[in-house]
Length: 109
Image (cartoon, rainbow, N blue to C red; front, side):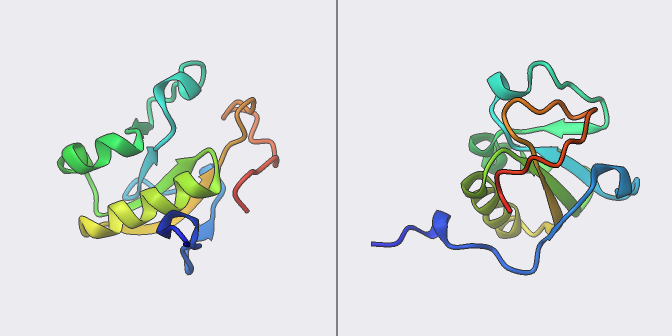
């Protein structure tokens, strides 16, 4: 049995946070305990379980996501697409990586 969360989502580019514009909302879908030390005012923090009930709080229809792994990336992209958002890219952060360093240690290539 293959679960949908393991099937890759095609057509979504890996992005560098520095390249994003103002009309794109950056959504961090990691859990609260994973991001407590990397708070960034320009990022909307909304863990995956909250996407369904809080998607109206996302200010723009074009979004990019920050995820910690492939499964989180796939699930969040599918969830956001279900509510009519255009996911233009993703940025993966390893658990110990701090956003300000922007180290290339990705776990969701």
